[in-house]
Length: 223
Image (cartoon, helix red, strand yellow):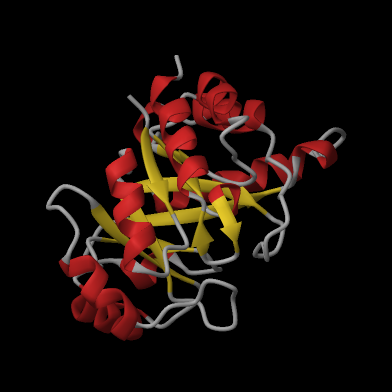
């Protein structure tokens, strides 16, 4: 069964609703000047109230490893997601499992993409000694409530299949997912997990309980 991470959690009520709906992980964005930015002071009390088998994940973007470690310790995070241009060698010995984000163009722009642009995505596999999973997301900027276009799912499936067995890693699919398209995305990509943020919101930073429930049900029920 596909795991589900609900990202962009900013308050305890949304965290509890996501957990009740069946979320396996919750994401907290520690990236300054973004719509869902939270501080350790906000996140730590939420994490303390999570059930033991729901994973709190911190999202960071080109932050120094020392800063990330301090936030992990302050909040009790159990995984980190790196969203910037981090180098694998800087994250050896990370205190918790690392999920590395790789950004892809929207589906409508990928036709005719030069081969070298596709092949450069194999940089993801440079992380195979460091990261516990690779998350494929859209190149589009952080959403402020608008719907983002999904990435091209067949390309992600191809990238996973083309990698040599020793380089294959769990895939987390993100970017433009909604309750209406997640089942199809899971059927195509067959990822380890899916990650949703703006696709289940009422407004930036506030989740819509019905969308959260439908998204998780669709993701976990997909074949």
